[in-house]
Image 1 (cartoon, rainbow, N blue to C red):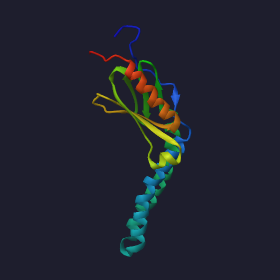
Image 2: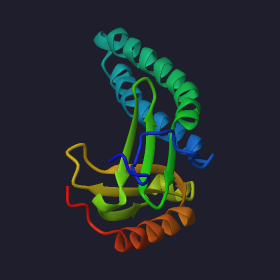
Image 3: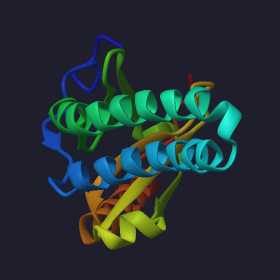
Image 4: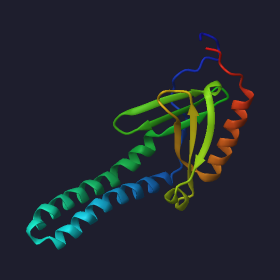
Length: 166
């Protein structure tokens, strides 16, 4: 792999769409609101256990709000992606950052996904499936039109790339 077309680990150039911060914040708020609401309702209904239900509800609410305020902005600074003629590069994570590369010759399928919240924020996720045991690469938080264009480009690039015999 010492040739000039060798794929090397490097930092991807492109940031996700800025709207991804709002999408991630909404996900964090919803993940917090469900258990806090359940504990709050149970605390209101079960008087003998009220303190032991409302205390964890308050702790979860505080932790969830702190995570909602902090992590999405951090994720925005960390999450990066890039597509070249040779490979797809993705960097994700918060505390443990992960960088992955998918050479074009190893890509099997390219999909786009738009969940309800992503649709609300006009975002999409591009999933690049390879034969890797680590699973698919996901580029989250892309503008939905950019995601569609990216899926088309990846499909064309993989079709034009000969398979890797190694």
